[in-house]
Image (cartoon, rainbow, N blue to C red; front, side):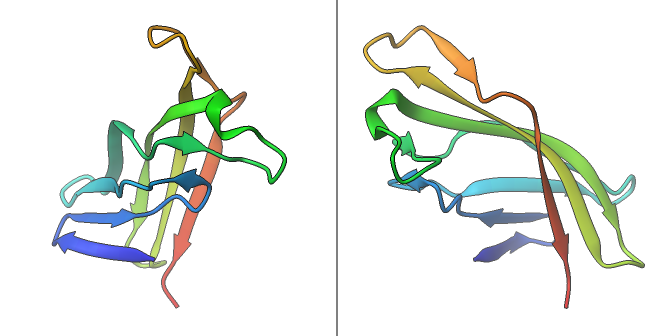
Length: 105
């Protein structure tokens, strides 16, 4: 679910993480740009039912996008990353970027 934090911020939970931490998105009302800085989103990312949670520890998410007020939509391009299990200093990203589209019903 999405939660309004303020007039310019909302949060959501990634459904594919263990011990989820809300992802906070900030919207610049003057430019209609939506951003979230790189932030930890849970203890492990589990992209598939067969994935080993320990493989994708300390997942993070960052993204940027735009708000179309008349169309009541927010579209963001997101990048997911994680730390390799057992190697705290080694980070990687999941290949490609992911699109998050929200449309008010």
